[in-house]
Image (cartoon, rainbow, N blue to C red):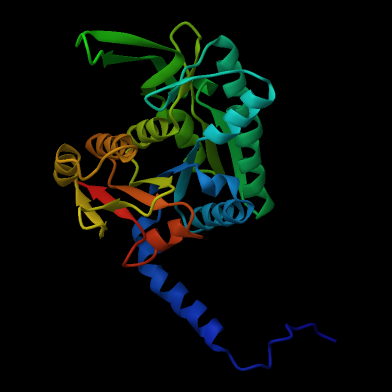
Length: 305
């Protein structure tokens, strides 16, 4: 007796036809991006939601299966905060950046390069893919220096240099390490930890690290998964297509403000460094990556030259 699916004798339903139609419509996009490198910054609520994390892992495996080379750089701010609280380590923030002393950076590295990184690797492998976890320190993948910020005193108007401790900014990315994985079945998962010229460990903002990686790889696309739908104009309408000069103008006139400014600056820098386009996406939407890549309408804001 030959086994056959229970639905073999049934007429195709609307759901099956819709799936077949969706796959057929995705074909031109699969051909367009075959062999392309996509750098994806992964973090926020999407990383903390088990269902969304599972969907994200499946999406990565699908991209790899159709010939795209995904490279993931992940964040982990909430998880770091929880661990610091559990260990009763008090920290402060300046302009959204965690002041990081030696004890804190050790914990940051443990959380980012350890539990978070390996959980993403495990999620990818649990859905049939192959992933490898890396830190920016591995093979000097991300070289970094101390990030220096200045703040002007509102009363005296004197600029003060702020000491953020072991918070860093990328100075160079070694693309040779990642090119090895482009021609393999492995998906690189990168923790945003950098290494200084004297071996120091630096905590790097994940958006910034991902943008630097995208630029070094001349990625076709840089996807920044956030907790917002995208960039909105003054009328609160989503902007789906945003040239670099217009993005800079919107930051200048205050349309883009607050926490969105550093994200847009990262995207603009990546595009100017040679990335084909940068996309602000809502990571809370299931399969947001696939909606952006394989449909005409997209799902976020594309920033391009």
